Length: 141
Image (tube, rainbow, N blue to C red; front, top):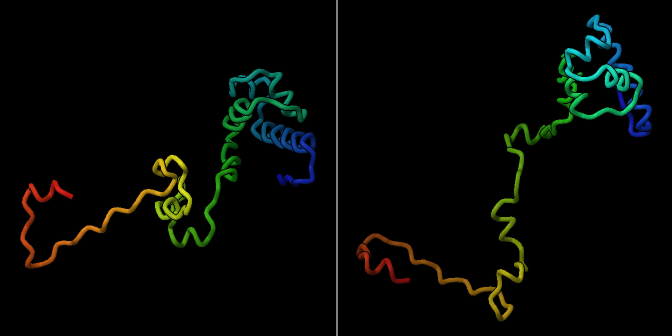
């Protein structure tokens, strides 16, 4: 079954209904039997097979009963071949570097004067030969 962007909604519904009717007949089910097994009304089965609109949950129940849920797999986003090779994960939010690269932080992140906050001085790293700082030294900046 192929759908095209140029098809009208009614044409797609009619094609979908015809395909579901053929699947039902291949499984040797009557409309009444399919409705009972799917937990929907017979009217719902009649409507979808005529190419009329039904609720999405009812379509899922019918697809499950006809063992056609796999048809919805194509709705899942697929990673590109490059992403598959790299093993990259699907991004949920921007990385830290993208967040910090904003040259104009929101006004709430600025001090009352409207200027960006001053950066703290860099911390001196410990080197061999330095004395271990005491607990009192650690608490001071």
